[in-house]
Image (cartoon, rainbow, N blue to C red; front, side, top):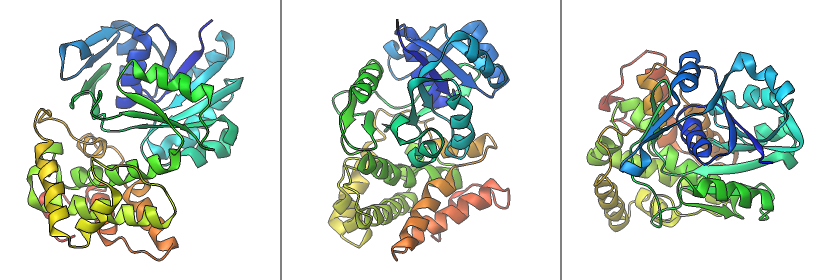
Length: 350
């Protein structure tokens, strides 16, 4: 009998992963608070699209409104719950699914930011698994419609990294990695915390910039102001991560040392990084934009406090300033509350 899987938060990433799981025959249920999205999945299936023909398909899925979650008590416990909500919704989403977990069931944080401690506070450390989705670039474009705007990672880039908080490789993370490998490249990692902070560096350099300026991935890469800001955002985050003791992984094809050096005025390092940023536009959809840019466009709350704001706060704890991250956090907050429109001028002085 296959394990029962729940996707708690069937937004862009949750629906994308859940759609592939459903097509592969996994017993998966997608749970989401958007009524029209749930009804569309129930009636028409879930439609995924990408850069190649093989990524474009529609599959039937089991979808559930939040108000129907209590019915899980009649249909049997959940073995694996993927929490895919925004970070600010982690508490309630985990608390909601906790009562329906099997005795040996566990929660996988498939989210931006660092939420394992929040989840552990609710279900216990032994029931927490971390999962990073790097450079996946998916967007929920409408009810039951998900679009991926970057090529598959394949052998060039490992998209999914699954790890235990204690760093050991266990059967359950090997199981998760095998499931995700049907979607794109996946691996287990003994360095979950280093992977998490490295992904935080990558998110910090693009998500908030898109939210503050309104630019997409390619627009940010082609604009000199945002390229330089992105470098400084990543460099500050890498410096703080190093000081906190994390073993940082490659961040968007460059080492932490490269990002820090470029931030500190190493012209050669900066030129290499900027050249790669521009080259990355090749073969990438012109419509792609980070999740925080999507949030602003849809009038939603962003995760800026949990990304760039979190970097600033952790830096303060150890006496390392992060002025670029602090400036961007303030800029996004201004746009988010409607005090200023998104535009390049929001970040020009940071």
